[in-house]
Length: 333
Image 1 (cartoon, rainbow, N blue to C red):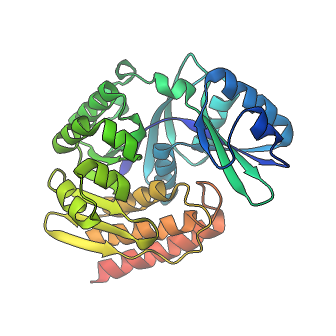
Image 2 (cartoon, helix red, strand yellow):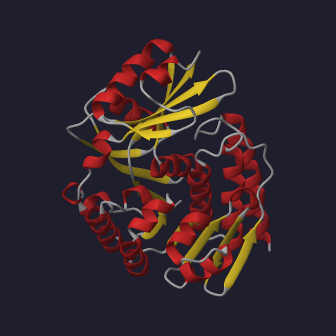
């Protein structure tokens, strides 16, 4: 089986159930919002959460994708930066538990974390995100040997603001013979780095994953199909996800609309990350373009049925059965 290496923000999701809104009020966090916080505030919030009993899960866009590819059976690695602290050790332990080989460099700041507060009355979620040491990853941290032996290299778009880092990474990955994919991750990141992204995609990237808003920001087209066409002119494969309505995939003149896989959606966290994992896994097996999209859709439908970005064991078992059938049917044609 082929292998994949990812690079991204090494973040640990810290999930806490709050009995009331007092902690949110204390740290001036509007209910239902997502706020970036500094190191001092991040450390204070974490200290306040510990007595409540919290759940820790390694997160970050690329890390979520790489965890899933490892569960699929691909040899999977991850490059990121953490602090020399408990949160960093938790991230490393969680990734290794799933079989991911980590190149986790040590930063000066505390490890990055996404603190998720769930208020009991209506299960509304509020986020406080501290990127910390994850932001300290620089081009000089990368070594050509990190990329050797991998067939795929996957980038999360949140790193694109560090343009020198991404350019160095894709140059090393291309030199190592990797198929390069990028998940654009956020429309505002695309907007502020559009010229750079066009240059990188046209020169280095083979597979682009984007949702509707990211595709619009990249191409200026409102219509997902037209945006898909424009992206596909720059790379080998373009994927535009349209949320609960499904996704579009294109390679040259070959175009497919992928219907959404059945599922009871309660939380969209991690859906795009897992879609990318399923797509890349099927692509690594040489599956037709349409089947790659269907595998991505299948696994994404499982993660939206749970709170957070990690699929539980029963749903993984069901997903693997459904994906096995998809692949067997494709092979029999």
